[in-house]
Length: 287
Image 1: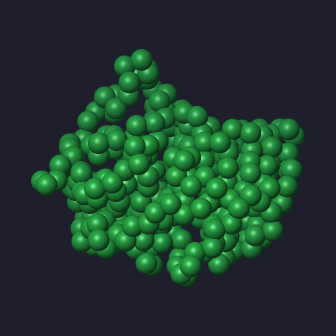
Image 2: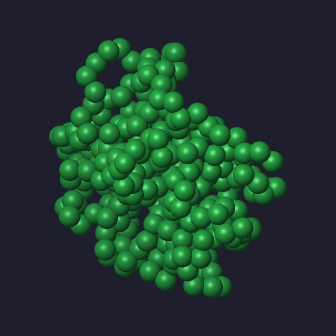
């Protein structure tokens, strides 16, 4: 089958928004906003999970939390932080990414083995894929689309590839060399959200594509290793606060952290709870 190549021409900023959500002309949001005035009720600690040296983590749409522990087991917690299940792999491997947003299927990416594992909502294995059979190169980041197709960032030839695991076959390719130019990218994270695909490059910022792999724009947020989404906002840690960037009106606000910023390694925001990751474990806060 002849692979489909996605458009990489750069559209105007206004053309990437739905007609009903076109912003009025305004100055671009700053890369980092100053924290809003903290309120006593903003964070209420409800549980502390002892989980030293935890790894990557992800939230599904029901608020279930998935975390890789120091032994690269996948731990599943309820929204309030109660342990539900633990998946222990039969073979050792390093978990580089967990993607739980699909809800019915949780994707686990082992970068050292170049393998993808799919778990069900009870953290039981469904299927697995050897990426060496799917692409000629090395995958750096991956995610699961709502239609169960796989997006892979091939670091060897700098292409964004989509695969249909039911076949399996390569359905779309997006070359990235024209976008990154002569820079040396450091791709860290990939997530499809609200019909857009977000690729985090620690050096250049966040590249945004549509769900067919066509390039749309770049968000000027560098020095990031991961991002999250809550409602219509994209969030990340920067300048000692949680930065929340609205995807459509392009405004930005900041939420102060409940603990010293130096202690925070990662943060996940759900609808009712927030999860603050430190070297000692995870603090669960009610919002």
